Every structure is written in structure tokens, then in C-alpha cells.
Length: 416
Image 1 (cartoon, rainbow, N blue to C red):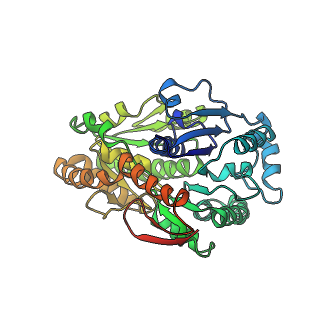
Image 2 (spheres, rainbow, N blue to C red):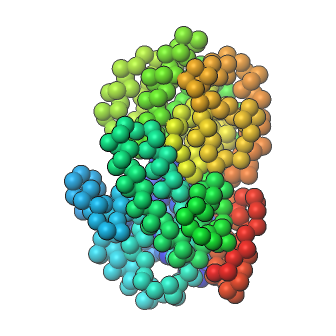
Image 3 (cartoon, one colour):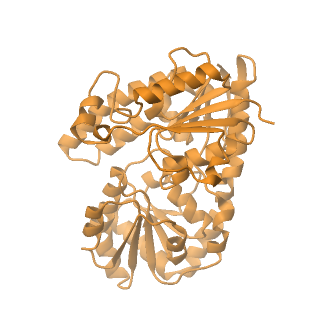
């Protein structure tokens, strides 16, 4: 029997599962429905909700943004308005806000779970506990991204960073629970949100480990490097271009037969750009990543700026594929370089490491064995159990309560 009702406010439809934020929201909803009735509101127009996902929610509504708010000059103008930013501008329409207010007036919700872009739909008074689902410390990510961009773009990102930091501070201070992806994200929040540690639970990104078991036993010896992810997101594209321009020429000189497969969400112009590189295959918008993981000898995650945790690395671990990444790529993961994965930040060293992994089954096997043990701690079923424990303390306990981290890194006391 459900212990109450939770309202979840998401920017995009979680059942699409074609990006990190969508996957995180999907599995958090899957966990919540064990104990709660879940009502879902999205600022998207994704088409019909599939029956498999409809079974997870009691009520669902979508409110598409106006075309002008999806990008371009209108959205930039909105982002420059007081108390707005590039992450929140245009997400919550008047119709969406009125719908949420109506739902709150009709149901005694145990909590409202909200992504940062949807904070404009929250009620003005805190009669209901708010759970801030922090996919990243977004302002810290913007600051890190700024270091990888030319001067004009760097200035724009830092201007936006100040606005986003204010929004994150306000939402984190208001929330009864902050669900952060990693201890490193919590440390970023602590720099500008006094006392946030006391009400933060570490809810890491995860993976459905059992789903990838068939791939784990199907080793590939094709000298194929897979780079996956949402290639319509600027930080991923910056890292990909770093790889193509600075790593790939060195890698090809060491392993002439190497094939690099880039698979994920991407626009046509990026597809055309990728096809100009020798030894590179572009796989735009694949319906499933499993065939590409199965074909991969090694998974590379060339990330130059990061926050949260990288789902593509967890998927590779679950699929039994050796991983090469950068320091930023391993951000937030509980791992030891050289055990579960290899980390190199300099282009030549990144290429040398990939070459060693491609030609040495023993090295790959050692990395995979260690990663297989580590990834069990990132299974979504385990993470979901911890999330529910944190929710219980928000919804049911008296004002002074203790909130354990989901990953077991620490126990955080709270006065909420």
C-alpha cells in the first residue's frame, strides 16, 4: 500500500531514457513507486506515454514550451532577466504552473521532487517538503566549462554561473532534502550553501546491472573504441573534438587498424563533421546502446569538464568493457585509477593508454574484473532503496532527523 503521494517535476519525459538526466529521473520514479503514488509533470511534448512507464505513475501531464523558448534570441533574452538563467528560462509555462497549483490544492502530497529547471513551478509557501534532485552542481559545472572555452564564451558562461549559483542556493536552502549525485557535488554546494551537508543525501547515478549481463560475456576483439553519450550537449562535444583532433592521430599511429565509433544523440552537422575523420564511424540517435557496447573493445570517455557522474562509464562497467577516461570524466565515481579504469589527461598519454588496452586482453580483463565488483554498488535497485530511506525521513520523521547517504559514504544529521 502506498505511504503517500509524491509530485515529480521534470524538464523532459523520463521514459525516453536517451540522456543522463532522463535516465536518472526514470529510475528515481521507479524507486519511488515502491512506496508512493507518483504524479508526474513534464515541460515537454514527447508524444504518447508508453504503457510500461504509465504503470509507474498515477497521474501524468505534459506542457510543451513555446517554440520560441526552446532556443534562439527569445530564450537568451529570458535567461538575462532577473532571477533567471540559461538553465531555467522558458521551462515552466503559465499553464504548467496553474496545473501544479491545482494538484497541490487537491492532494496532500508527502513531497515534491523537482529538477532545477522546474523550480518556477514550486508553490510560494513551503507547506510540502521539497526534494531537490540535483543532477549536478550546475554552477560549478558552468565554471569548469568556462575554462575550456574561448574568451567570449567564457565570459558568457561565467555571467550565467553567477545566476545559476543564486538559483541553486535558493532551492537548496528551501529544500528539505537535496539529492546530490556525488560527494564532490556536495562539496561544491558547500562553498555557497551554508549548512547544506546537514540535509543532503548522496543519490548517485546508477545502472541496471542485470540488463547488461548478456553483453558482459560477449568479448569483442575488433579494436573498436566506443565513445557514447548525448552529443548534442556542448561539454560532450568539446571533449569529443579534443579526442578527434589531439588523441586520434596519435592513436592511429600506434594502432593503425583502430575504429572509433561515436554513438548518441547528435545533429546532422556533427554527423557530417565526424565522417571527415578517418577510422571514425558516426551512429546518430541509436534506439539502443547495447549493440554498440557489444561491438566495443574499449569505451573511451574524453571529458574535459564535469560534475555529477558519467552514466556511460557505469554502463561500460556493467557491460564488461574496459574504460579509458580523463580526470574530469571520473568525477564523482568511487574508483581507483588503474584498477577499475584508466585515467589520462594529456593527449599522448590518453592515446598510449588506449593503445595498450586495445592490444592487451590481459589488461582489459584486469580492469573489467575490478569494475564488475565496483558497479554492483551502483545498481539502481540498491540506489532506489537508499532513496526511499531518505524520503522516509523527510516525509515521516519529526523535525530533527538523520539522513543517510545512499552510497553509504557517510551519515548526515539534519534539522529540517
